[in-house]
Amino acid sequence: MTSEALALSHLRPRLPSPLRQVQDERFARHGVRLLLKRDDLIHPDLPGNKWRKLAPNLRAAAGRTVLTFGGAYSNHLRATAAAGRLLGFATIGVVRGEELAAGPLNPSLARCAADGMRLHFVDRTTYRAKGDEQVLEAILRAAGATGARDAVYVVPEGGSNALAAQGCTGLGEELRGAADVVAVACGTGGTLAGLAAGLGPDQRAIGFPVLKGGFLGDEIRTLQRAAFGAPVGDWSLDDRFHCGGYARTTPELDAFAEDFGARHRLPVERLYVAKMLYGLTALTVDGAFAPGTTVAAVITGQPLEPDQSHEPDQPHGPEQSHEPDRPHDPAAPDPPDPEDFKSSETVGTL
Image 1 (spheres, one colour):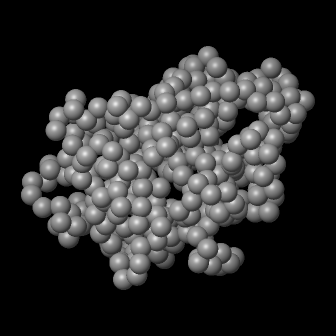
Image 2 (cartoon, one colour; image 1 turned 180 degrees about the vertical axis):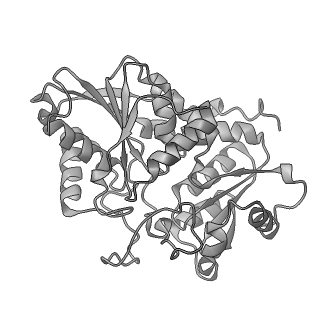
């Protein structure tokens, strides 16, 4: 199958995604105009940044088997499996946690399997070392990705690579001339990296990390160097609104999300979108934007089922930490695995 044959257009993505103004007195009283960029409506199976990040990678794969990585409740795995079903190519999902192979599949992984994805479970030590070429080759062999190495196209965890960042420039281009400031939730940073590159010179982007740690800026700059040759665009991060870390919410965040959703008839996804909207509203109330400013909030996903932001069988005590995989220091304690706490009901953001 050629890259031309693997045209995504027949899936009828809704591009550009809808942009609508909403009336919210918390913004209006400060002279700020609020727009919602509904990237969650691009495609029912590949919504939001999943479409923008996967599409260029799937074109590059050109029908080859796609192997990618994720945790037990990975939205990225689900989107990749759905793309394989819709476009007719094979997919392999390398899943963190070999113990998961012994029990019944959770709803998220069952959905992947139903879409034809072959699941391969690995221990967490192997998973963290997947960036090592020898480890990757061993994973490929164990996962049954036999034959020539170039017969398999590898997409990184979360789909964030140079092609993904390039794909997300379309988000910024669609917003040129429409807003002064664009806000987006950040997990791995690929969406912000591309968004900022696509905006015009008189626009700026604000990323709201959904996890704590303070390392995301360096990762975004690295992505931009790989995608565009150098850091590009006017962007910044505000890490005050992660609400305790990845996959954490607070009563205040939940109340805000319920209120925002009721005001604007918008189901608000808790782990990403709610934190971005919460932070954007707080900045507005604090006077961070001059009167006359237009801000656009990118809605990258919606909950499939409202009010279910955690897997119910997982503990969420204060001793739990929810941080993503990052470059691993062998001398440091093993970092926890956030995807193990990620809800199968959350769609559309990384």
